Amino acid sequence: MFEKRIIPANPLQAGFPADAATLDRIKSVKVSLAFLPLKRPISDAKVLTGRQKPLTEVAFLFAEIETEGGYSGLGISYSKRAGGPGLYAHAREIAGNLIGEDPSDIARLWTKLAWAGASVGRSGLATQAIAAFDIALWDMKAKRAGLPLAKLIGAHKDTVRCYNTSGGFLSSPIEEVLENCQASVASGIGGIKLKVGQPDPMEDLRRVAAVREQLGDFPLMVDANQQWDRPTALRIGRIMEQFNLVWIEEPLDAYDAQGHAQLAAALDTPIASGEMLSSAQEHLELVQLDAVDFIQPDAPRVGGITQFLKIMTMAEQKHMKLAPHFFMELHIHLAAAYPHDSWVEHFDWLEPLFNERLELKDGRMVVPPRPGIGISLSDQAHAWTVSSETITA
Image 1 (cartoon, rainbow, N blue to C red):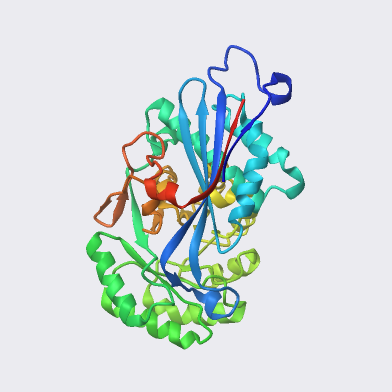
Image 2: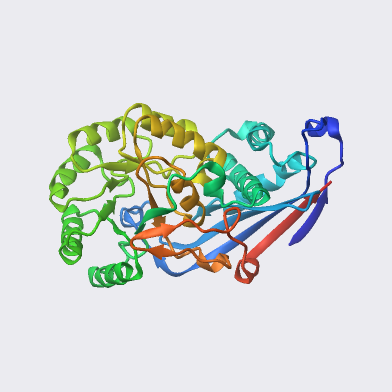
């Protein structure tokens, strides 16, 4: 289950610079595969429309990088329902390309890893595997500087507005959803997101109306998980204008940028999307077409922090708002480094993986003061690990 692989040290093959600017080198890379079981199966619209089965676990790829100088970094990627073993397999294949390299050359190393697996492309599973290494390198760089990641990048704020999703799934009856909403507000959450997109849109409207009545003017979002077609999204979107939503998320297929643009132009309610896209290039179309008001990249899905920063730069030019998907432990730093309005998504699912916890205050999440991303793997994370390999020089 746990393996160690040695990569021959050959500077010419490694392709790293040998001049005085290189201050440290990577000596080992450990990749691990773990499965986090959910407390109960959850369903969104994709399940109710028959396209997926209820979600019961999340697969995680961990990358732990160490250098000759004694520095270390932790990176994480993930997959839901399928793909976890594939991420791990690809990561194992390309990890050796980091041995002997200067860990500070993050953008160059991203490109090197992409070329190592060029035949499987620069999006999807390939970039999600690279993401774990990229995030680990950024974590290490911030630790080396003694700064939280947000401060290393350049923070625009020390707290970010925070909304909760995990209490509003369609697998929960409305009575339970209302209880979850009440508990979330009491915990310090600043917004509530509900899942919609059921085969019967009228049931969606009834659930949203019930939550709006309970919450009053409290920030409320909905997420259709790509299950509406264009006519349905426009019709239901117009009806939902009355609820004064912060946004309607993924009303259409994630790759229907033109449809999102038409919907954004037709509705007063802001449109949000981007979480299912797996490269910076795929987000470019959303930006160019003004297809969303809130762009929602997911750093592990797009290839890590290096690619996420490119998306932030593109979105900033259009004055779009930012609401990264999932993995709040990382995205709090990236959302804090965005100059325009941003939200971070609160999921407590991942908390058992880490020794640290994030702070909520007055509806906002606080950027942790710890160096790097500010997380370390818990004993539980190690207990859920099913396979691991360490690559050394």
